[in-house]
Length: 473
Image (cartoon, rainbow, N blue to C red; front, side):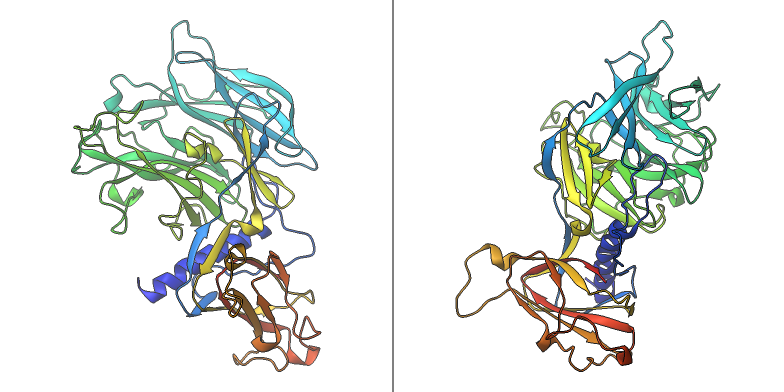
């Protein structure tokens, strides 16, 4: 891998850590991580904010851990509205194929116990079965929007999309479109972008593609397309699409690249707004040789698991965690059910299939090196508070050779010329294979350099057999 590209990917991983700490609350229909009071987070940002000076550290995502059974939750959560002490969640349920969709609302304080649960809307009964597919609901500037598609006839021409709108308290619901909004694929992820003041739909679409192993869609592959709307009805770019065409222009598509297996397809994308930063879970799959037969209940190949993507704006996505799935092995069925988290303290909590899963925001993404590695941050404006690191010494979890401890971390502060500040060299700040996960940096008996050394410094970290998650200062 090209060194510059590798450094960029590592920087993206650390950027995710920063935003998970520092993002503010108050979005509409999503879940934003809240800043920890009194702490500044290391803004590692995108390329140029972080430098790999030595070694080849890898990167990855922690697995959500099962926390508890969800209690009192009667529907699939789609949107989350944080509040002071109480969070409102809303979502969808249906009694079966051909039945109307139901929008439900509940409140929670911790993402585990849910109360005040009840249905706020039910789509009209037309007197004949309507097969609604993959619906999603979000809160925008004017209230809730439910976007759903119904089974198309024939399906290869695309499924017709419809929208319904209502107030957050469950009143004022009505159908928003008089004609079909557009026709397309039934897999999509709807969200509200507060900076744009628009809904954003991460819509799976089709691209002509010669498959080595044809499946139920032998001449197209599933890829990602993004469109925006102020109201859930008028979409830009617009246009219908179907398996048999028309197909959207190539410049509107996000497709697998040369680093993916050649038969990779994008099945579903679930975006999460984390304030100034976005993360998303892409579910991938591959086609199935016809000689093997169907893959379970699906007329196509097996899922490849999921992959975390990151973005500064929700439109240009980067893949620093390629081939790293944090959800493998969890009993989640469709892993994209972890789409909308609830912020509780320093955790993000997801309810999926009756179980609540959790990740600590400051320990979500990481870099790791089994061999020696050296990383240097961009310039920091010290706030006067001690610098702390979230770490995990992997070597501390297995027997060590008593004569040589492999896991360590050393830190030094650099001045504006890149020289170690006297008294703050790496030899003065050493941690060896400890079981502690939050380390407060200290050089001899000092946490910070004297005022004369300046407040703008860089932090250089030497480490081995350790995961580094985030930096606070």
